Length: 181
Image (cartoon, rainbow, N blue to C red; front, top):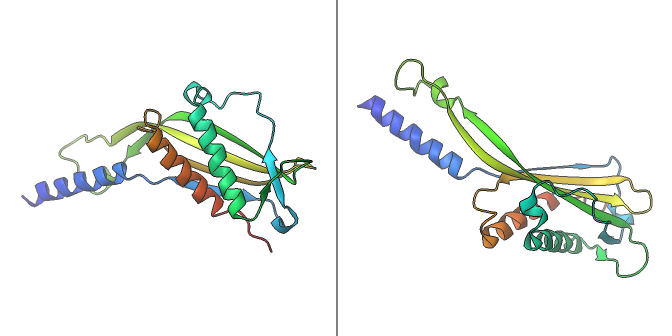
């Protein structure tokens, strides 16, 4: 009976973990960057290459929502969108979707396998990655790069879900954006 309880508990925990997978977010900032000397931003020219997935390339909602979320994040940090002249900063973003496979060795390692020759559970899913680059517009030097990765399950079919995931990704990335020294 105790073994059945352990197996049930392990199944519940694994379901909760995979159902509540958290977004992975990180960033890189140029060494010695003083963001205080920059005041304006604009979008760089569109990349010649597609975003990396036809479902994103052809989705105006995705493109508009990413740009809107980034513009909001930049303005909340005191930067202004350049309406004339050369901006101080140029922004580019890239997004792609790739197939991922996670192998869950936890059950086997903890002895929760019901019998000999137990194979670890595998989880196959599509993961979306969003990368935002902020460059010095005069030198074209990369000053900051933020990236976020998460499952796109349900996102491509539902604009509300897509908007929530984009907002969370951009917000969490820009929490890492440098503050003036």
